[in-house]
Length: 173
Image (tube, rainbow, N blue to C red):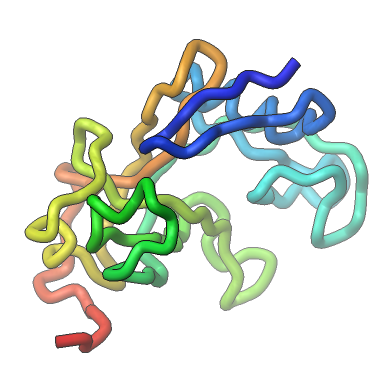
């Protein structure tokens, strides 16, 4: 059974046969970040998949992960293609490297997640907040509830963490 719902006016659906994503988002609905851990090589992975991208083992166990990390890269959208996002431009698309499993399986590898930047109440970040964020900013995960079965993981500034004095930003002005 699919559960059609909306986020910012766009449909959110997870098909019945998409067991991996159903499991991931069901943990998110509990406001817990769980990722698949390969039963053979013991590496975590995101996004959820049917086999390990490192060793191809089809068996994995869901493991709790702390949802904190550093901004690895970002895209700042000024001209939204999706109609639902037009009134929110500019907004950020984040690539966050989680503290968990940093540098594994190799020096330049890491466990990275994509999400939007939001305020601590789960609303898309204001232009003023966007200007505070750059490469190296410390972020933490929060969840935007869609219904009882699904919440969307998003990132906000981690107020408890020490932030870089001048996080690097792409020169666009």
